[in-house]
Length: 215
Image (cartoon, rainbow, N blue to C red; front, side, top):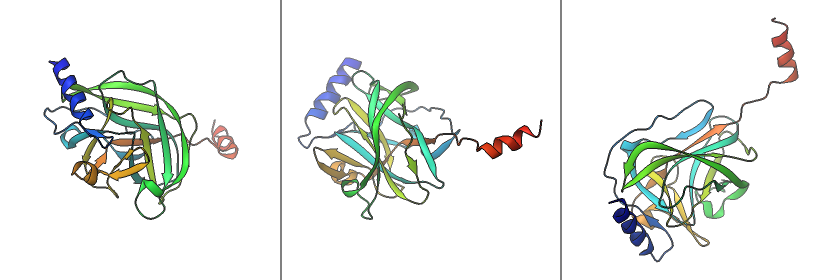
């Protein structure tokens, strides 16, 4: 049965001539616990909110932080038709005012190590996977600034899961050098599931000295 579902997904994906694909409407229910320790921004996965899954050369979604943060970890929710990747390319951009990743200014990019946990949820005949991406260095992002998170996908193999649009701009997909908004690409307005975690703030020398005087 899984083999049949796999063939159907691949055939459907390959039928798109514009360079990106979607999984379709969701079918089953479930839930996954998510840690919020050290979280800087949350658009977290909730199965009840799951709408679809998109694959493209890259996907991007936007966010604004409530406080300054050095991001060390990105968590996304995925379906993998093939093998789960050991690393993924991640980038952050600053929006230039037109709510589009196409003209945004690069802030940071790099290759993050990837680890995966099965959420216990299933849809389209596949496991829904929580993927944790640990960044090799920490981009320092500023509160109140409009940013984009971009993740490079293995087209027709990796699907980033999405929910109904509610924050800033809709998510976008990249085909070649052309960015396309989700409603134009798929006829539905959506946001991606993702969480951003901040690196712990190091204690200043004077702060550590004050702590030691307590003992």
